[in-house]
Each structure stands twice: as structure tokens, then as C-alpha cells.
Image (tube, rainbow, N blue to C red; front, side, top):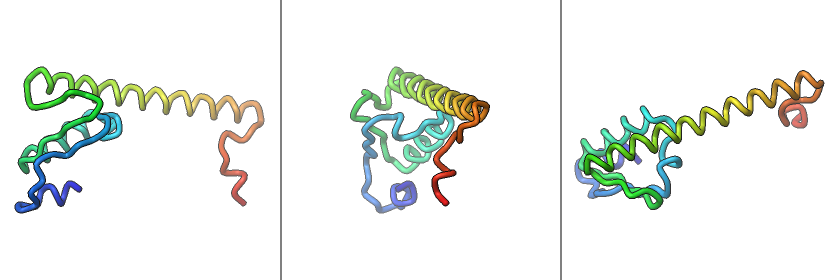
Length: 100
């Protein structure tokens, strides 16, 4: 998608995402990709968040990105903790043992 948007004659004006958390779960990746899109004249829009090119929207976009990364990091931490607890109890911490 990025390569297509970057093409000089692509005609793409907007990339529409349902939710910024589905666009990126890492705030630095989000910032880099948005900058790449903007450099190609493409604007990002979200169905669930009201973001545009105003200073307030840019701030909110960054806040959403930080919270999305926090949420993803917390889920990863809880998953790892749960897997360690399962292993300590002698249970397989994943379904990998089922695939043989």
C-alpha cells in the first residue's frame, strides 16, 4: 500500500483506517508511516478517531499511538506471565504441543 501511495501518479489522496490501533501498535512506526504518506501528499483518516492535520489532531494522534503501544505491550507482558505460570504448573503454555 505504501509503495502504491508513494507512486507519483497513484491518485491516492487519503488512506482510511477503521481505528488507529489497527493501523499501528507502535507509536514510532505510526509516526514514520504517516510522515511517508504525507510526503507523498496522502492524508490519513480514521473512522473511529477524528484526526486530521490540525495541531490538536496531531497531538491526539500521537496520544492514541502511545496508548495503543502501551495496550499492546501490556497484553504481551500478561501473555508471557501466563505462559510462565502454566509452565511452572507443568502445563504446556501453548498449543504447539498439539501440532505433531
